[in-house]
Length: 311
Image 1: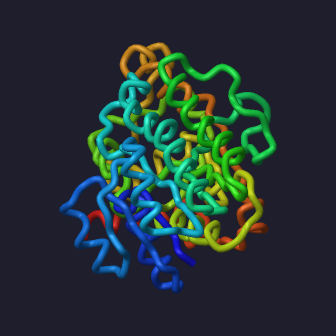
Image 2: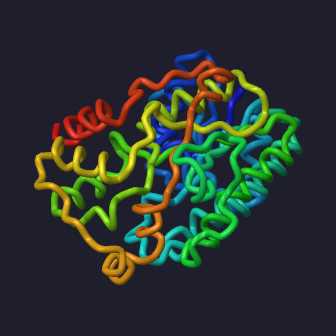
């Protein structure tokens, strides 16, 4: 098939593009930076510079490629800093998730591309009820105020892609880790800048970046329209995974911090994720996409990540 991939040099795209080419698809891959075109061409893709917020540019690039499938992986996550002021840090990504999504859906309609696969996130589930959520569970009705716009943008992708494409699939990724993803995460753990806040009762679901790419490849080729949790098999509370990551990274155990001090130093969003977050179940993606993660547990994945980071 002819596949148009945006965000092709990001954490997921860098593995998705060669995977699509290897699977026999004709791939047009986009980047915002001209110096990254060569790398995309070397793996067998047609490479173009496109700004996802430039509607005319997006329409022109999609018309030239005439894709059957469009994959929306556009973010600006590599440009983020600290998450005390989430909406400020996510502003560029939120624009890509709203205006950028509209531009891609308009282009898909223009060329008759039936399938659109988009990047979502599982942070949007309600922080009540059981610790692990399925795709049918309710979303958070009251996001943390400092992250309200960012969460609204994620929900916009969820709703708009399903409504705006004949075959709209949204992949609700867990927290990314792995090569070329969240390297600052490991540095923070090693410097003991990531404490366990409160009881560390927030439950996180993770996904290694190559596993995220393999799920996106599966969604290009099969699966009914709808949303899919793309996470590993082992949701875990912060009190479990953070000390484990410190251990495999060769760091001292993380410090402990009361909630009130966490709010003062890190902000409400971080405290909420550390104490109230809910994980996600991947049964639907396994069954309907025929997808199996290479790292079913973050335990094995973290070890591989740390070792690759040190090489």
